[in-house]
Length: 225
Image 1 (cartoon, helix red, strand yellow):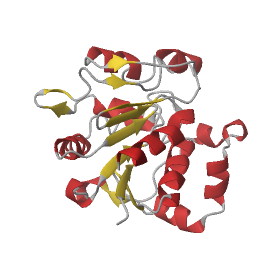
Image 2 (tube, rainbow, N blue to C red):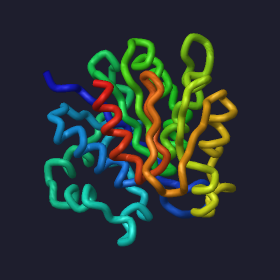
Image 3 (tube, helix red, strand yellow):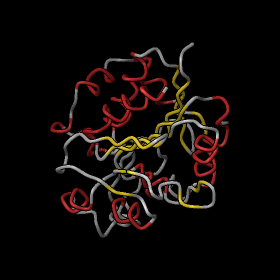
Image 4 (tube, rainbow, N blue to C red):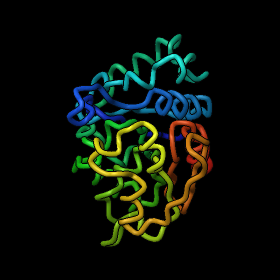
């Protein structure tokens, strides 16, 4: 039987008060999507508002192109899936085997505070299902609890590093820093050099450091299934 995987994307498109656009990072959708698809998984994509979620324009600049993105751009079926995401409020964790959160700066504003998203993460985790998040998306865990404590407490985790946020000059723009927040919650934060692929598995929790970690995090999730 094929695994049923829920992928969650942001609906938020404003980069703080900069006047610039944000959203999800295209590689962080495209790479995991094809890892899952090529493994024969059944994929459902959801976002808080449903429909077409905002792509961070920076993620689609020439220097950020990847093979998965190139494949996506000639894949009409995948484009249709992305254009018609399901509303998060209509999702039930019981219908899926696992959930994967793609990053980009957008989730820091909406998914991190979204009550439905928080309860979904807790539902997946409490029912023994793995939860994965890459880059900024580990920030969506910051209100999630497990047995009364922060879900990440005492767990090995990674996510977008402070040094990476400094490199893109958004330290003062984001609501919080992923690295600092994971540490504050009691997570055992780990990282490698900026922009290198790095994914950490601790029990049912899988986290990836940055866009380059999307494939590794998705593969780690498949191993759990």
